[in-house]
Length: 373
Image 1: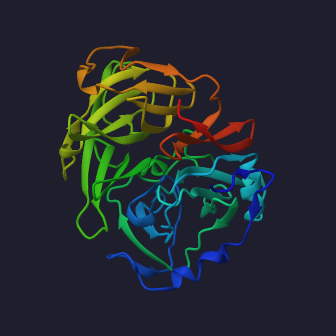
Image 2: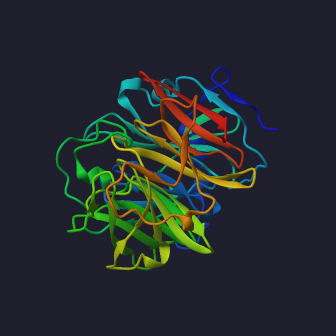
């Protein structure tokens, strides 16, 4: 049994603890050793053998980093850390108002928690990756000498409007910050949601890992029931890979809040893909994060939202829901709002029985594990 992480036992340590481990030659084929230069650290996701994928919207790139954090553990420790933004700020030598926590993910092998962070705000913000281990120690992931690879994202939107002064779960006016809105590793490919500068700017990109083959970019069109029209400009805000009748799909959520299925087989270079809207979950809302899970022989998606709480969406038979093609507010796949989960700004899987949530209450941010509802 691993030690329970609590705010009273929380310890901050220096980043140098990983340097020695990174000094060896590349352990994963296709990666090279050297310094990683991140202009921004937004969405993150894990792939095979502890590889961490980082979305760098400012540089229009995806970076793969071998964390060498691949010692398996049987179960995750419960997590309850009060004021984690203050602890992050203390580790990085600044104040909590100069910290943006952009994403939180759990390494499925080690169960260690990773955070992508901006130290400072605006064009001079520094991208930082942090790791929280099972003993309650937080450290900066060294990027000085690591095994890594990167893939440039073609045709990114132009940078304009405001600089990065707000976390990625808050709407920004700078479309460049939406070059990468979500990442997942699916059957040997890194799937990247975001915007491009093309006519149909909503885009899903698939990149074979370890980034030796060409990226395939697909434009995506959906019908938005609450808006009563087809849309090609709004990016996927969050998605999960999902298997429906033995076929691989992306289940994607958009602002205001259509839930859409997109076959992975349709994502080909230059393709214009039409997603099937299987639910409208309510207007005036921005989805933040979603996870898929099973409980009591039923399947669900849990989704955190900016204005509509945390939704538990029933997904036992998604193939039964006909596409929504007419104006509609709330329709399709049924859901319930999970009572007690308020102020959730990040949501990810901790293990098969628990989720990890980052909550924000008037600037006080807590990180804690909760049982899957």
